[in-house]
Length: 186
Image (cartoon, rainbow, N blue to C red; front, side, top):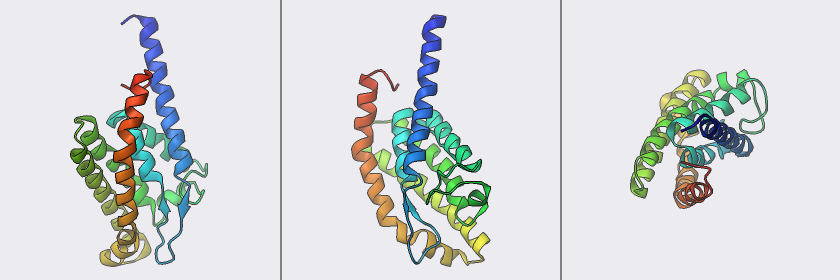
């Protein structure tokens, strides 16, 4: 590969990582408060699943980390159009950290096979790890038992998150295929 094509490929990669970070920034703040829980329903995990389909594990995780840093400096990209270190250090911060591991686990399963059953299992495992981080964090910061945090921060979200996984399974491969055809995804 010559220098010009390597530079073009590097530029395309940076643009795609930035674009998918922007998608997470757009979908992440869209949330719905649940009256029984301090944890809002958001579209962040759906955006992360799409990001992994488009970019793969490493680049997709980098894209999520960019989103996390954007929110950490105070730009309102977290659920409910919030941002700043207080959100990351607050009761729902464990979920924000858990999304890193969700991206890694889901990405490994999505990136290495075309089998949608494996994709489903990968996204399910990634979500479970995110739930674990979030639940432990919520319990600690809110002074709740693990069971109470699980009831408040996970149980109400399972149907919606399963729906998001199914949407990602249905739409993600098509997005990836079309971007590959256009020369934007590898």
